[in-house]
Image (cartoon, rainbow, N blue to C red; front, side, top):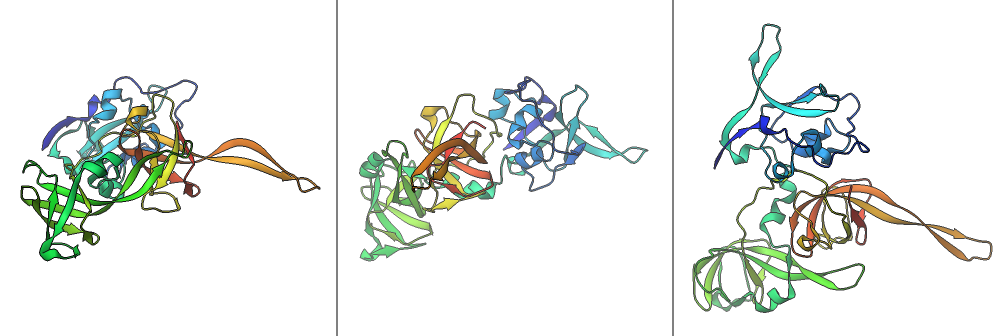
Length: 346
């Protein structure tokens, strides 16, 4: 798919800007940055801003542009403009050298494949979580598509093998993900199970519809058995939203670290107990907090706990959202992330 993009459209109303909370530039910021392959919107903003997630403000993007940004490409030049008295980034493109030996800049106009654009965050960190099922509701487990029989009555199958599944009505969906029910995601405050993690096993392609339908395994990450479940594979999706703060107040808790880990850190994927129903959307940036208590023991051995302000230690970028759960990539963290930590507006 080809898009014609004019980068000079990046100038309307600043988002979430506040005189009480002005943008802060890094010490000695560059006056420009030439975009190269491997750059991200977060990383480019971090070369200029102390708070890279405030990217839309320095680019003066409105809400619609945040959700559908005008893409940036390798070779573009990001310019720091202070002519208005407040920092602003503009985009140009090198077109050669002037007589003084400096590059002239012109507005950029592109006609290029989407794959060449600069992403919001590193794609390699989240690609597996975009194409694979992350959670499954209990009702889906009871009424969804199931593997009912194996090739040659085998107990386990792998890549290239076939199996039969019930619940596929027709041939309208060809590609399927195979998963197994994982651990429960339990709300730290209420103790209620919100959903279950889906343990990804592999991919399959429909060979012959029917009841049961015949499928062939195109990729097996783990051994696949009778009783495992299937869900239609979503089409590939590019995360086009840029980092921005939630408009409404967010008060979330970390439900778990993906993969069943006890703790995580930078580049880990965490589940939060808020989703679409709470106004969470792709691109939201949340701050991670740890509850702190000051413990004092007197001469008699009596313990006294005094609550102190929560400690902010990291940032996370929300990249996938369900009704009551969302998943975020930890992009900054000064300590380990653990279940029960808070996620709030940055």
